Length: 312
Length: 312
Image 1: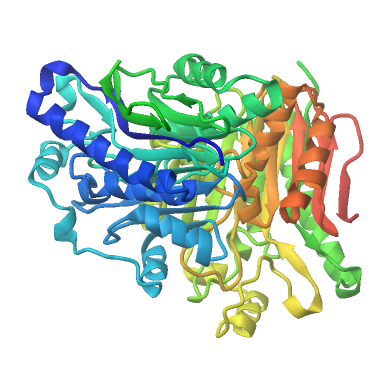
Image 2: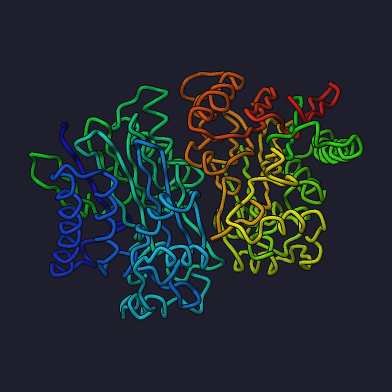
């Protein structure tokens, strides 16, 4: 049996301390800690990394301040459209879903798709129907309502503005990429990654970001690493970010740290893509790089103290 | 000014000569030739690879025997759901769309998304609405109806069988992956790739394959290559096939031929993924590898005779 590692994120962006109260910061830290503990307790008991990332992301989805699951932001129609994905680094099997509502934990639907559908990527109402066929937990629209999110949407709903984030006001200079994710290495040496998002406030035209894209927002391969991204999804798709890090390790012999630095702080910056990611390699090394001002993040290596941070 | 190259495909699979009549083979060859000429005439005049792949794929979409655009197969609801994507190797800009009906040429909607939406990937009815806002050509459902496709669907509609292909009968041993695509290098040294599909006959649950996935079914980068894939999409997504070839060239120094051989005939085979792809590098080299029995394909290098083939 080997050591285990886990890392989680609750989104990256321009998170300015001036707009953060001590109470709110404490809430965020508690949300991260709860998810980290949920995932690491699975790993501690010898459970699979796949279960650990599913449980950790489910915990983040249930936490109302992160933009995923219960905390999902409003689209330009006043609805919720959520995306999620999961990948098993041992088998390279993956599941992904986009444009769903009423599913309590989108990451659990992604896992169900991986295991029961014969497909990788399902979309929209029909993906929900697949989940319901398999008795996945659902919630009424009211479950996904929060006054804060609704106000965020009212501020921009009659405009063409779409927010990449779950900030109070774009003009306040807060720009947060609302996504959650988890990566883990279990005691059996298997890596896994999962990502979930409520998308962008006031998003239009059925826009899908990188979160449900295997290779872009999520990737796991026992030979290299497990990755979950958060950021301006369009750039992460074009740069195929998660798989790029894996390829830099496998084909160019870079370490996890070197690959993460190059992709997040060089390639993405040159392309104009803001955000970050969480990464674990097959040795349990953890990297949490971001090129924005902050990223809600936490990690734990077996035998070490948990790490929880928001700012740089 | 440099030389130009173009390659197109109309899907890969088990295309058995015993089920092909000379008349039908001639029709397929004419469809491929028409698309090759449409694309190469753009390149001959000094036009962009982006225009060339859009025009070539539009021509394949208009041709009723290929499973894309007019020839799209029926879903399990008797509807048509089409996916497409396009990528510019010069800027790494990309556009993609999935789950649309009524749009005459899905590849043109993917291009419009790349250029006018501020996003990369749009989905479903709202993506159609975006296209219509920009006056994209639409067609009634009747345009996408063909007696042959309808019969294919009737054969399986009350079953759980979904066909990866546009074959007459699964049990006849024909297994064709219905996708079309084009890759091109223009005289300015710019690479581009585009892919379009009508999906699988009798497909369920809003399944999306690799065709609209940047990095999986479609990728273009002037530094390496342009790729369009056709095959069992789930495996192509998990293997991030198109970007994998680019990474093998960029990070491992493989030639286009070496990278294509390794991914299509080794990695994909080991994973269980059947299909093929078309590829052009920045020198205009063309590769058309497939691990199935056949692939509808054609290519042209400036100054050489066009190549058109179906079987191995």
